[in-house]
Amino acid sequence: MRILFVCLGNICRSPTAEGVLRQKLQRAGLADNVKVASAGTGDWHVGKPPDARSRQAALARGYDLSAQRAQQVSAEDFHRYDLILAMDHANLRDLKALRPVGARAELDLFLRRYAGALDEVPDPYYDGEQGFEQVLDLIELASDSLLNEVRGRL
Ligand code: 4NP
Image 1 (cartoon, rainbow, N blue to C red):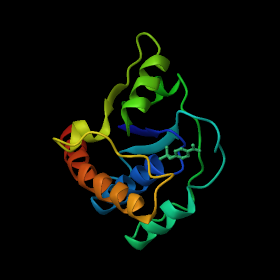
Image 2 (spheres, rainbow, N blue to C red; image 1 turned 180 degrees about the vertical axis):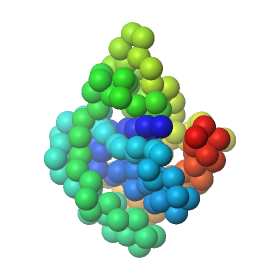
Image 3 (cartoon, helix red, strand yellow; image 1 turned 45 degrees about the vertical axis):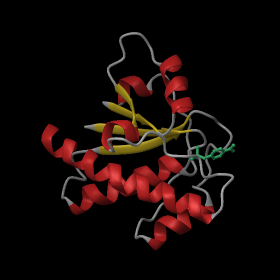
Image 4 (cartoon, rainbow, N blue to C red; image 1 turned 60 degrees about the vertical axis):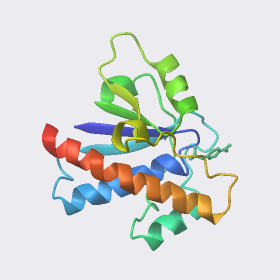
């Protein structure tokens, strides 16, 4: 199974989701069964590590994002991944526009699918520290439910 998380810049939200899910998969002994990656709809930060604030907030909860490098999502990703999860409505709209006809990947809003009543992971880029903590709270919550779905699918 192959899962791609997508946000705008691929330096805050989607790298955090990648790091959180990867660690949960490792702890569940499923790391070899699932490929996890992340990408941005924009290309401004391609090649850069996650934002220092995201890395710091994640590390404080035990997630090491330092090896990640930003990349831009492409139409081919709809053939490479089974599940593409957008962080907000703008990301979802951009992904729908990019999606090739006949693409295999399922596309959905991450929180809507895995955290019930919740909707978007808010962009923390222009926020203070609290925004990055909220991103982690939301992603940890939805990742538990995503992990359950992964278990069911494998
Ligand atoms: P992300 O946050 O989409 O969670 O990675 C952002 C990062 C950079 C920018 C916007 C959002 N930016 O405008 O450069």
